[in-house]
Image (cartoon, rainbow, N blue to C red; front, top):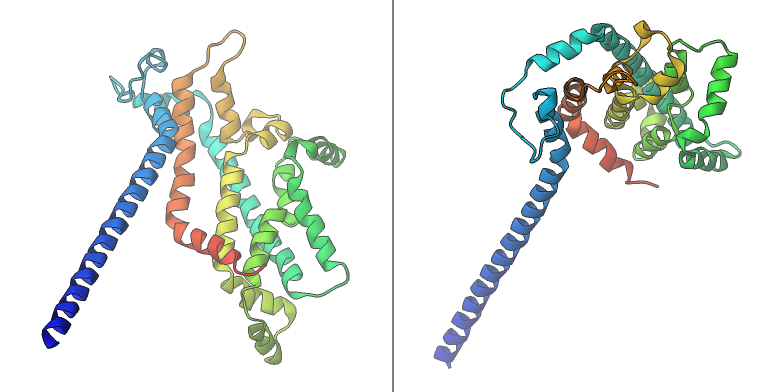
Length: 301
C-alpha cells in the first residue's frame, strides 16, 4: 500500500514537472513569435524613414535608381549644408520655434482650464455641452478652413502669426480637453476639498493642486501639440505671405521646384530629416510620461 502511494506521488510529481516544462516551452514560443511579429512590423514602418535618410545623403541622380541603393556611394554630407544655405532656414527655424512653443504653451494651459471646468464643476447643460465639444472632433479640418480664414481676414490678421497661435487659446482642441478631463477624473475630490478647507480658492486649487497632479496628461498634450505645430504645413501656407515669416515646412516647399525648375529631392530629404530630429528627441525624452498620461486617461469614463 505504501509502495503504491509512493509510486503515485512520484507519478504526479513527474506529470507536474512535465506540465510546467510544456507550459514554459509554449510561453517561450508565444513570446518569440510576438517579438518576431513586432520586429517585422517595426522594420516595415522604418522603411520610409530609412529611405528618407538614405536619399538625403545621395547625389540627385542616384535617388531613384533601381534597385534602391540603401547605402549611398559616395555619402553626400554636403547636401545638408547646401540645403540649409539655399534658403534662410535659420530664420525659418526661429519662426517655427516661435509658433510651436507659443502655440504649445497656450494649448496646454487652455485645454487644462477647460477640462477642469468639465471635470469638477456642475452646471446646467454641462454634459450636453461636452458632447457637442466632442462632436466637433468629427468635423474634417477642411470643412472649417474657409470660415476660419474669413474670420481672420476680417480681423486683419492675415500674414501674421496670430491665426497660427491664437486658436490654441480657445480650448486647445477638443481632443486635448477630453484627454485632460479624463485624467482629472482619476484624482480624488478629497484633495480639493482639503485644500478648500485650508482657505484656497478655485484658481489656487487649479494652479497649485491640479496642474502638478496632471503632469503626465499635460506632457502628452504637449507632445501632440509640439508635433502638430512643428509639422504644420497647411496653416502657414494659407496665412503667411512674406518669405521672412515662413516656417521650415513652408520653406521646404521650394525644393519641389516649379514649371521651369526641377525638384531637388536630395535637399528636400535632408531638410525632412532635420525636421524629424526634434520630434524624435522630444518623444524619446518624454515617452515614459507620455505613455503614462495616455494609459491613465482611460481609467474613468
